[in-house]
Image 1 (cartoon, one colour):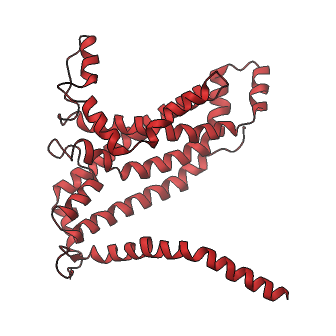
Image 2: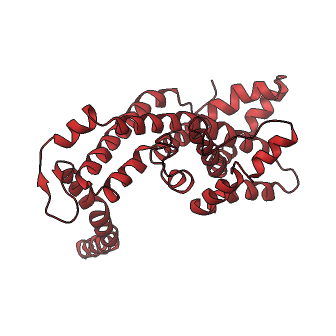
Length: 296
């Protein structure tokens, strides 16, 4: 009787996970395998794929200057957006980790941009940053500063996109940091106050060390997300001016669906996957050693 009951439970469990397993297989595993095969082919989506070996990878590493520019822009975007986003969201979390009146309203207002469509947000910021009638240049004029070509100047376009990305994602990271702050026992702060520690001493000695697991998580997620940036570029700059804001994912889309070089686009995508995999692996291996779960 026991065996029959266990068998029924096993069958029920398998039935429950079958839909997820089918979805992962059809929409994740099969496309990953197909993409790997396509990276070794030349395929325009209208004829049969032609196997060409490592030719796509050779062209990518040795002949394609736009690929390396896109990679450089992606790294630059990552180096600007991750520190800026993490610092801003942590400051918001520290400021709103209180019982001040209306704190939930402030939290909701900061989180609100994250739940808005990135396309709508991108279009709104494109108008805000317009060199002719944008509100940002109007604010600069109030202080007697010259107007800036935020998105139409190659020296400021990618930084402008970074600003929008940081603003949009700050609310999400703030919620994660707030969850981490709520998990720190109040008794630690009470003991530190009794010992005469001021706010900044408590921040450095208690808050930051005990928040390192959360910081580590936000850093990993933000790094992966920043390497996959696409929406902001497509909506706000289309990779321009010139190729100054062309990032890897946008270049993959352009190569696949404008130039119909699906095999070459797959090779670039797999290169990006390998880079992300090894960067994440190194972060987990080395940075996780600095994560603290108790106050020393």
